[in-house]
Length: 148
Length: 388
Ligand SMILES: [Zn+2]
Image (cartoon, rainbow over all chains, first blue to last red; front, side, top):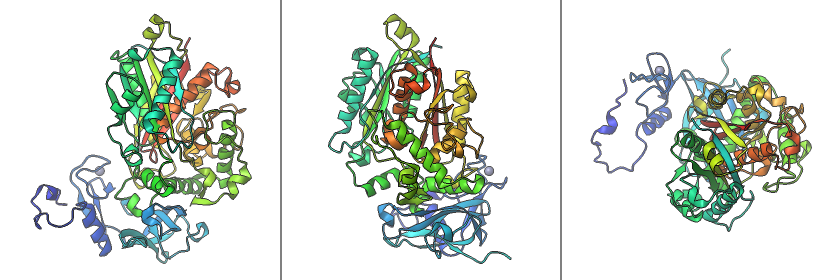
């Protein structure tokens, strides 16, 4: 069970650290450490934190389940016109990949930013790397060898 | 339940008006709508106003009282925000208010000011319609999100950039005679194919422009129209809204728009019509692929078959079911918070017979407007009919 009452408690650091996005920040840290997870309800619906209820069925019994090491690209785009935060990242490959009970959205690195260099069905791993523009954390996919 | 009628429509020119304030744009549309309706300003009982990014573009929140004042209205005013569907929901609530008997006259519409910002800031502003934590921070732009849908569509059903280029070319041709349109110039299929990429597979002419503009409608009860001798020949007979998961990655299908399916089903049931009864449609083609998804959600084509509609000539001006005779968002322009009202204004003109493209739908009796927010996490569909 996830600790869904964390946000109601007095912060251990006395609230002195920079405000963030509780739940999401921890999830991103876990993904960076290779411990990415999904929240899963008893019916198997997956979602990403922060969540208090399953968005599919309303169950509040959400447990953390580790993400599979390998995901599958479901769709992708080569972005040439970025927002200012991604000015130095462009062109880059934006992608959605399925990892077990959830899909993740991120940037696919380790391939040329060209349509022909990517294909739906490609196997990828997920982690966290720095945005080229400002060093902020970014969900990144990298190709892994396809299962034989 | 009383019937809601469109008594008048008003639009500004859609285009680049970097020095015109939002209040001036909306006042222009509102005064034109009241003049078109022949309804005195003092009879307006509520203002429903759509706007998306005014806090970013004009550093102006709390816009509804400002717009009421600008239009010379003395009545309760409320701003509606549902990204690019903001005016759609504003009109929907106007229809529901009139039907409920809570008001006889509601002014509904919207305004967006965009070209005063540099392009990268507009890109950033539009992106806030997506999930900030899981999409925007992960590199998803507004065109990028629709590009993800286009790639998923091609993978699921087939189709090509050339099919999409026919959508762009069709809508640019439709905009040629429209005095309110931002781009009144032809774009050939080859022009569209050779344009620079924005977010592949989408290129420059797959995308709607950045636009300033405003729309306004005077929605009245049937009884008000009769007792005040107001000419209001077009009725809003159906309204429906749908909501989906915010992030594209969380949708059941990456190449479908279930919120629009739901909105269409509700609007058709409300009006007592079916997809096959529809004679003309204005749909939310913020990108060419969006028109494809829209005509499928509206039930005109099965999933996977809408991609050929423009290329096969079904949805062209001379086709069986003309789509976006106004020029659509693609060529007429897309002042985000005004678009939903503009679509209904254009459809009303088409059905009344006073639109420059009315000749293509001279016998039309049923029209549909489809307005979407974000990557269709929000959708609003309205059915308009020529009243007996
Ligand atoms: Zn569930």
